[in-house]
Image (tube, rainbow, N blue to C red; front, side, top):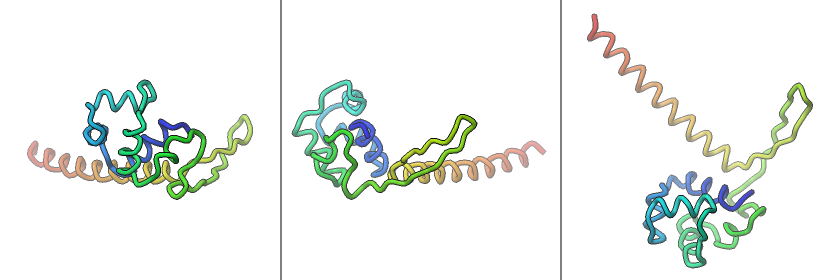
Length: 124
């Protein structure tokens, strides 16, 4: 897994915004965003601050291609397609993030349904 992907996924799992992370390392959100995308270097002292907030070691975050020791469990998912079968590994972290996102969307749908009912009643 790429460093930037680990950093972004773990930050989202911890529900920390880029703005909050920027404050932690003493920069602005735009600069932090570039750091997270790998466009700007993250300095050693920043790695330490980021790792502390995310609850992992700086070494785990910085090692490209290595999973985070305690944060990631691999799940295998078989995908059947017309072109053949591919085996894809998705980290448990990505699955957890997707579940949280789905839950958030379900709540939003319910809220919109309620709002829609209210608006329909007003029209009648």
